[in-house]
Image (cartoon, rainbow, N blue to C red):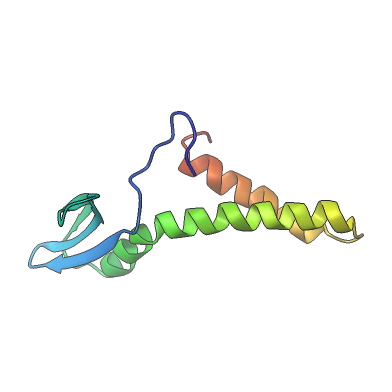
Amino acid sequence: MEEKGFNPTPGPWEVYCDEQGFMVTAPVPVTQIQLPVCEMCGFLRGTEANARLIAAAPDLFGALLNLMEWVRLDMMETQREGQSHLAKACDEGDKAIAKARGQE
């Protein structure tokens, strides 16, 4: 996942809730400290779901990178006809990866 100029806080990220809202945190290596990644104040509808989606970002990003690599390898090895749905999915994955990296 590492690339020049793209160095996100490593996961796993976790969600904590207090009286002010939700906080997404990441562990600091070799300590018991949790580093804040994102704070979401309040308890509006969807706030907890949004916090959990943000916390899943490192796992989702890593899974997408792996999936894209496997799909492309399979497409090259099999060279089957009718794989336009896989090519379209790869294009959508590329767009999501570019957005995460600030390259959109």
